[in-house]
Length: 259
Image (cartoon, rainbow, N blue to C red; front, side, top):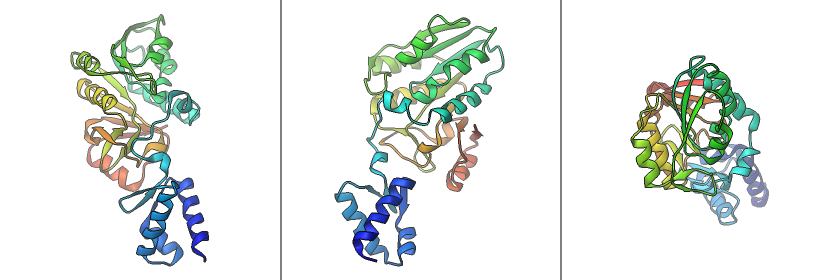
């Protein structure tokens, strides 16, 4: 096989799977690991992928890549709805208590299922997301509070030291948090340091933490960690995690709910 053909196949594999390993590529093409690394170097220089320890990932999964709200709303909507419907079962029917709701499109999918779940109860919902507040404002059974701060245009989330301080003064019964990435080694992470600080405060403040994460983010790592696996109580996702991640979650006593 010519090198050009091999490079094209490697680039396709990364686009399709999101991640490839040096050893797997060496076995697949019957070449040395040194040859694979040279191929990956060429593909990275062309912008086709991003090299990481042991292999490569799609450029779209790099640590600073962050989709805007509009783009994320159109991505895996059905899976996010299933995750939301499963996640709200963490609350008893007609729940009366306090909920901290993180920014993000997966947490945003919780709005309607959450309202159905608390029907007849009286729940205080605190959020740092402008879009979540708009969806929940004036709804029956909800006492709504929105956290102040600088609103990031990419995510519509309030961030900054004032936002963090407000969260630190709270002790909600449950927090629903989202993440850009979740891995066995690095935990939960996000590209922006200010948003990570807000998420970190949410995790620390809540009596119970539910991470709602669509499966495309499992195994990924973003720039800034905001929680280790052992700091969350439940992971709700739409597909079984890898064997490595499942083992790490089990070791840290994290419940995994598949929607």
